[in-house]
Each structure stands twice: as structure tokens, then as C-alpha cells.
Image 1 (cartoon, rainbow, N blue to C red):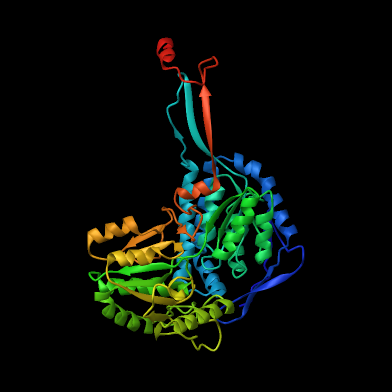
Image 2: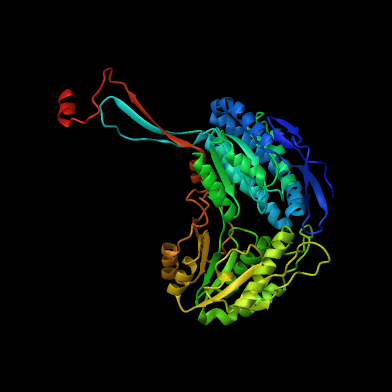
Amino acid sequence: MMHDGLMNYIGGKWTEASSQETFPTTNPATEEIIALAPRSTADDVDNAVQAARSAYKAWRLTPAPRRGEILFRAAHLLSERKEELARLMTQEMGKILAETRGDVQEAIDMAYYMGGEGRRMHGYTAPVEMPNKFGMAMRDSVGVVGLITPWNFPVAVPSWKMLPALIAGNTVVYKPSEDTPATAAAFVKVFEEAGLPAGVLNLITGAGDTGAALVANRDVRVISFTGSTETGLRVYTQAASLGKKVCLEMGGKNAILVLDDANLDLAVEAVTWSAFGTTGQRCTATSRLIVQKGIKAKLVEALEAKARTIKVGYGLDETVNMGPLVNEKALTKVEKYVEIGRQEGARVIVGGTRADMGQGYFFMPTLFDQVRRDMRIAREEIFGPVLSIIEVADLDEAIEANNEVAYGLSSSIFTENVNAAFRAIRDLTTGIVYINHGTTGAEIQFPFGGTRGTGNGMREAGQAALDSFTEWKSVYIDYSGRLQRAQIDTEAILRDS
């Protein structure tokens, strides 16, 4: 279904790009054009940034509880429009309705959570060195924040960035993926209707050059980026050269470790969902199965059978388990890696080909066996429904295999042994660790992010999200009525008291 032409949202007004140029957003299941979106230029980016700058003073001075009330209204509107947004998202980026509904729910949860921070956002007090003096630390807003977000979670991921930024008193310029501009526009309309003042949130659509213009704009104080490692490092380098604060969430090569004593049925369900949910297009998707030798044969047999039951198709069909890849480029990349795996000597035991649907960018759920730890398919991010099975002898080797890749987002271990579980918690060097659960399903009240090549140490969600969009201000109040010496003289203090 073709929607009306989309527009940018700048300074509280919906407007075309200054270039008058557009680009299509396409349904990856049907290859039909959904809408035409503005191809924004650097001038459009600057207009959005200046609108955000103009709105910043009043928004910063709006009491945080009042800011929170707007987020609560947005949460209510998102709840009312959950199905509408979910269906649009499925049409635009392909994942099944059960998953797009969950995507919207994460934004609802985050809006309520961050709305509540309007009455918390705690600082702290601490003892000071001198008598008749008080000290405290408090969070302060930063200014204009630039958000660059991906297509795979086109409501949830923007909410992880936008909502903590807004509650902290910042204004936002939001650049979504060129694959999901229609979902982004629908998301922004919720905040417009919730009563967010003009200029506090601005939307600009476009491709990589639009994002680059946002990074380069000197009036943007913070850049928060989620996407590929290659692009993220370019963003990091350029933004850092301009003195900006940067928050990165990039690639992953996540693993589930299955030990001999694992609950087999539970592990099969978790591995299947984690590997093939969202067609493997999640930063937390399981792409490596590190399995102990004793349980491997039974686990692989069960996984093969389970993978063959996955129904591939259009995500609006409630009976479908897995949708398409997002576009032809993504499909070609998966095909390339499957061929690389074969050439390296791994064996495809199920899948390995495009799904013959007549149209769309579908690929079959794929399992590789006989994968060595040094193979490219075991080390590089594929971002598709491809799972590599790696055999290990014991827990030590499993942990070593998990930790040796360039990424460190999410890991999971299946075991009934509490000692092994706690060793894994201690020794797995990833930002997220699960016990007897898949590598997906993070909750908004806990920090989200990874180590090594996955990010730059910043976190999204939970209290940690506020660190990305605030700066600490230390305050000292001297009520002695006289200038006190900075150097501590304990004897003098005791004498004067």
C-alpha cells in the first residue's frame, strides 16, 4: 500500500527537503514502494539544528516533572497506536508482527520509565572539607543531541536514545535509517500530538550524507549512533575531532554456550529464536553456537528439525515465523557469507539458499556445522539467519571461544550447574550475559551495550542512559560568611569550632 509522501519535521512544521528530491522506502516482502521520503541536504540538517538550538532554552528550563508528563502522554498514545505502528513497521522493514509489536512495546516501556526520571534523575550529596559548607553533584543538560538510528528496531532504538535525551532537558535532531522513514515519521507524530513544544524534536530523513552533515554540524553537542561498525568508527572519528560526546552501538557476534548438562529442549527453543528471530538482523542475534562435545549430536539433530519447521513469508501473515531481509544488499551479503563458509570447509546442514517466494528478499534459516573458530563465518558479523556450530571440549574452551572475537555484546550459557553459571558470569567479556536464556530480550531498566568492537563504553537504557545525555555539575555552597582557606588545617578547624 502506497502511503502519502513523507516530510521532515523541523521547528514544529512538516516540510519538504530544500532539494525537493525524494527517495523510496520499499516493502522487503513485496518490493512495492511504500512512500517517498525527503532526501535532506546539509541545509535541511542545519535548519533542524537551529530549530533545536532555539527551542533548547525554554525546554531546558521546563521543570523535569513537566517534561515527564509529556513522555507519559506519548506512552499512552503509543499504546493506542501499537497495532498501527507495528503493521507499518512490518511493511517497511519486514519482521513479523509479533516482533514489531514488541518493538513498539519497548518504546512504551521506555517512555514510562524515562518519564518517571522527571521526578528522580538523582544527583548526590557528599561531605565537604570545610565547616559551614555544603556540596552536591547534579545532572545538567548538554544542548542539541543528534541521533542516527538503524532500521532493524525503528521504534525501540530511537526511544532508547530520544527519551533519556528529552527528559534530561536536551533538544533532538533525529535522523532515521533510509529504510524506515515512514515508521520514523509516525513515531515523531506521537510526540507532536503529546504536546512536545516546537523545535524540541526534529526529524530529517536521508541517506549517509544526511547523517554525515548531522555529525559535522558544530552546534550538535552529542552524537548517538547505532549501526555498522564501519560507519560507527567513521562517525566516532569525525565527531571526536570536533570535540563532541559520542555514544556508539555497533556490531555483534553473539554466542550461546551449551554444556553437556543443559536442558536440551530449553536450549533448542532459545537458540532457534535467538538465531532466526528478526531474520537474524539483530545486534543481539545468536550467530555462534558453542556446544560441548557430549551434547552436540542431540542438539544439532533437534535444531535441524526445528529449523525445518520455520515458516518464511510476509510478516503480516500471523502464521509466519520469519520475514525477509531488509533489502537486496542485505540478501546479497548473506549469500556471500554462505559461500565463504562453504569454501572454508563448513557444512550446510539446513538452508543455505534464497527462499523461493517469487518476490522479496527472503533467505532460508541456515545452519553451518563443522565450523572452526578461525573461519570468517565464526568471526565476522553476517546479520542474517545464519548460525555457525562450533564444538568445544569443556567450559574453559567455550568461554575462550566466546571471548576471542572482535565484538562483545551478548552471550548466553545453558547449564544446570550453578558453579559453571557463575564462572560464566565472571569470565564472559560481553556487556550482556544470560543464563539459560537466548542472547536477545534486553529490558529497558538495565544498561544495554557491549565491549570491544561493539561500542565505545557508553550504554543505553536504564540509569546508564542518562550518562550519555547529561553532564555532571558539582556545586559548593559556603555559608560561613567569610572566605575559608582551601587547604585543610585540621587543628585550626577543631580550634575554631
